Amino acid sequence: MRRLVHYYPGALGNSGVTFALWAWARAQATAGFEVNVLHGGMDTNCGVPEFVSKSPIPGLTVQHVPHRGNHRVTRRPVGLARYLGRRDLLILHEGWVTNNIVAARAARRLGVPYIVMPHGVYDPAWTPYLKGPRAIRDPLERRVLEGANAVHVFFESEMAGVVRVAPAASFLTVPIGFDVPHTHWTGGGDYLSWLGRIDPVHKGLDILVGGMALLPPAVRPSLRIHGYDYQGGLSRLQSLVADRGLGHWVRFGGALAGAEKLVFLQEAMGYVHPSRWDSNPVALVENLALAVPSLVSNSIHMAGALAPSRAAVLVPPTEEAIAQGLLRLTAERDELSAKGRAFVAETFAWNVVIPRFLSELERLGLD
Image 1 (cartoon, rainbow, N blue to C red):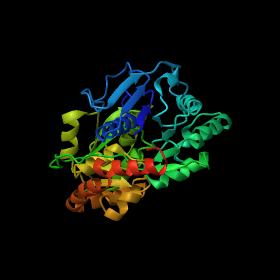
Image 2: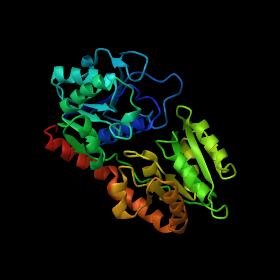
Image 3: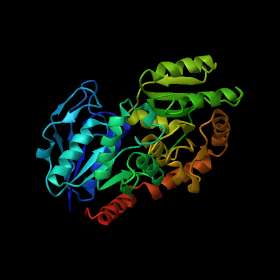
């Protein structure tokens, strides 16, 4: 069995990518793999996030790799080859960054196979955010993706975005796993919940606010938004709330963790996920696993898996559809609660996901 080496400079940071990386690393080590996580150091602006386990897990090790460069896009590892062996499988996270270009080159030079786990960054809706020059970046990215033994996407619908950049890429398709907790949705709160990175456009929060404004005050739900600001998104969203006259219905708070976050999600009337695009959103899976009734944009990649199970209210990311979806969420919440939890158990439980991952490695000759 190969050793799995996850490489991500920001592995000790706090993001959806790092949550997914550590979830995979812990589950793979628990399944019997030897796993090593390579990182570029801890962000001095925050401590190690809660999902980076501080208790040792047999088979899971962590190493710091020296890096040069201060910007996320240009940061690159120094001497990465010293941390790799011939029986390793290197797993690169995210994309459009210099560190992956350097790491892929080192792997090819050593004859070490590698996989790219992009976490949705090749979605056509995301790539316009990239800074140039694309004439240079695109060929370099194509080399990384087509040189990989596989690009690990979570849903088949993600493949098209990767193929736009790297037509000859190969794929491995397995979602992020999630253990269904013993805790359960209780409700009782007078609010809908949202949790994450406050980016009004990407996360569809502007659409959500617009949809709420379309509802008569007598049936308009309250909304509590908790998370961290992303490039001034919080102030823009606060201004939009004020402009639409929703100050009485929308409240803002900081990022939550641990028991405080659990209570916030459990007691909500429901959870809303109006993103214009998303790959495998951890916050959504977490809420479904808790049996929290959820309203979800049908433009995210997970929507294709959700639709047959009817485990959430799925609507297009428009103000009118969101408004109607909010009314349905209230009316159907008991049915949604049971179906959401069952969906996670059947689709995302690690005892379902890990055998699929092993099967894919065997198909690729990487077992």
